[in-house]
Image 1 (cartoon, rainbow over the protein chains, first blue to last red):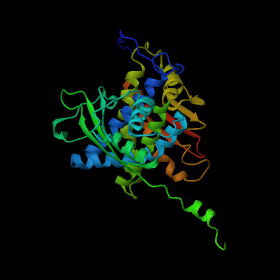
Image 2 (cartoon, rainbow over the protein chains, first blue to last red):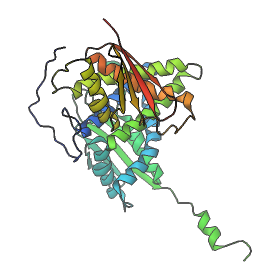
Image 3 (cartoon, rainbow over the protein chains, first blue to last red):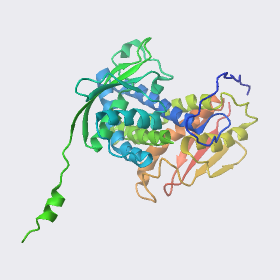
Length: 203
Length: 156
């Protein structure tokens, strides 16, 4: 079979120093490609299953939530991050470490509100949207909504309740994805075990 | 290598979702839906993989690529064993298939295994399809997490 080889003039930037296992691409890039393409087929399947865009968005969020609750353990194991002292640090860790680790991009964290618990994550080039065109009839689809679910689920496991919304998702000519994140409150740690040890029954 | 982990988590959620949509009685529908999704993903993947590579010499060359580079980039390891009858049938053996390791380490949940293999069968079929090869890909499991993928080339 004959194939046209398309030569790329620009070099692929490799950020992670992983050994190149293939002559055609770095292991890093292909790992993301698999996820991106699989995510695309998933959304396509959901478009067939669900009638309304709102339902698709809900399913993506729920699946993301389930993924996030488990992903956070993987993240903590890999990154050795210690507890964040405030919302700024939390947002920075999410943007600079987590996003970088799993999607290879670093969103900009901006638009902090006065209280310092509400911010926006801007993704100039959303990797999930790389090979995707959304038809007109799905104008209400929040394509990257799973990211919001993942963040919500992951932060829940570290006892942070958040309100996360995908505000803007690279529709039409706009290439930017914006995620609004509001850190609501910390869940209280339950300390029943320690109480029992301090006041043993009988004394 | 966080991305591979992300895919593994996504795959598991997808299987759960497709199964819940298909219902208890529709085992076949669940498998074929996942296989179809894998097919589309495989077509896209192989294009990116082989953008700058020279053409493959023959069918065996293609299969070796699937076993080595393709598998490594998807599952961080190579296929452990490739067998063929040189007449269009190939058997790829993976002793520790990464998508099965979380499911079980033996014969437990054997009946659930096909769902977790369907997407990958589709991936391989899609990849081969965009390389100009028509095939059928099935998977066989007897003891997890080892499994075998049977690829039969279809004659035009």
